[in-house]
Image 1 (spheres, rainbow, N blue to C red):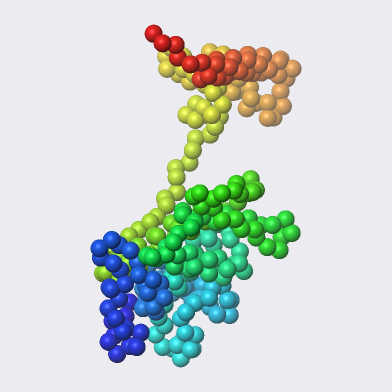
Image 2: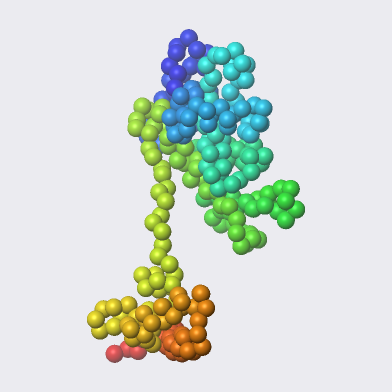
Length: 279
């Protein structure tokens, strides 16, 4: 961030843009061009090449307040907080396959939303998220705004991309505020979850197919430990073909297991719907 007293863009102390009392963000933090390219790269964890690719005017991905004349003349470019929000939007949604050709409209939406979250504004759409998905025509993406208290039920497809707009704004503004106040930049990483065990495995048991024997060994419901191992071996061998005897035995074990599993499901469903009797 620049602190050059001779720079016309430095007409006030940028630290005044963050309210130290309640943490509210002054709208000037969004509108005033106060941040350098190095600031943007540091805040968003991107490289110079990535930044240039995102703001290249020939690609027209997003609409920025930074002057293109400064770029052409090799002068220092200054970005506003809303510019940083738009750039953050590009990298957030590009990772999940959102088309670049619709990025400008999305960036403008995020910018307008940020200004409505400033003090003295009335927030009519709390906890705003955007659901978007490709239309059947293949020429455009549909958009639906989701927020707390929405009076109607949105009509969404089974699968869509959901963008947590308010979270994107809050986390980006928190980073900008830390930079302005010369604090450590907070990290809002979402680590990849550990792979879930297979739904067919005893660890997951999504299908309620497993139990333990007296020795604590995993067994398929309705089968002994030895029968469980036999069924698994028969299932594996059946992929390469099987004899009539093997096929008959595999079906016998599988049928006995499935009947026991269905009985178990019925008992569990009955227990969950039967109210406890008073003692």
